[in-house]
Length: 149
Image 1 (tube, rainbow, N blue to C red):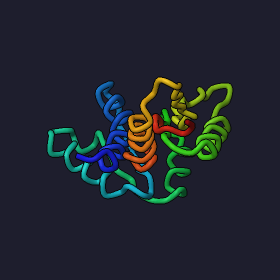
Image 2: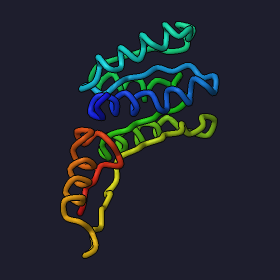
Image 3: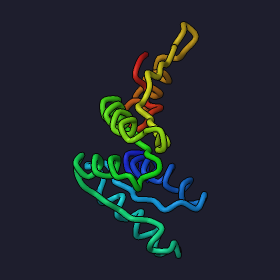
Image 4: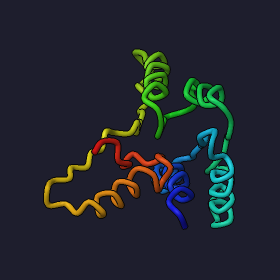
């Protein structure tokens, strides 16, 4: 399978699998660009024997995500995406906290500035191959994608 296909699936399933293994119920809102991949993951989870009430797929736009974050029943939030979205989620979750209401955990993977350093001993053809593979093989959908050479 090519990385551009498997990485949206890996990103979507990583924290979902951890939450399910820990015994939590999951309501997942996939990225607007990947609803079909998320739907297939949901099908496979149910076909594998996961109880239907343990996993719920809720595709849609940002309004769906906002409603999930603001819902008092949600106990944690995970976002692999833009810093601006993570900040908005963080602020929304913070407004839910109070003297008798605990802060809702947020795991936000907003990417990084991953660098490759090529010194004078590097073979140019290997550097070019590595740069292209890291920066473009997963259509930029990995937090480990090369950002600076």
